[in-house]
Image (cartoon, rainbow, N blue to C red; front, side):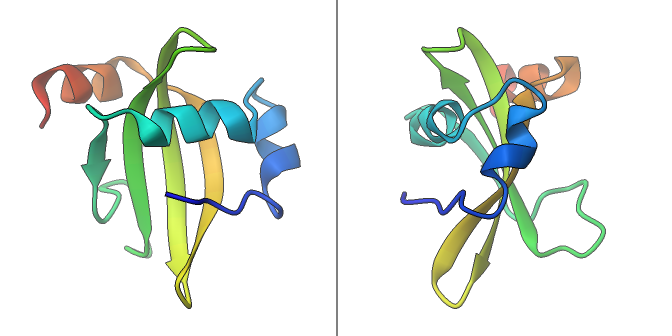
Length: 90
């Protein structure tokens, strides 16, 4: 999946993330994709929890689609709750 990080790449860098790390998590064949993101107040974003070989941990990635373009919104190392969901594929 091609994701446009042009608007939020600098933002995720504040958490030590890069678009490349987030894209690895999105490309994880075992990634857990939650549509919509259960934590989204608007219900328009999706949450993907996937593994980044470069970073060495699970990464939670938030994306939104607009007019056929998928935009990266946020990414961070997954917390325990997201890690459990990934492991159980909930």
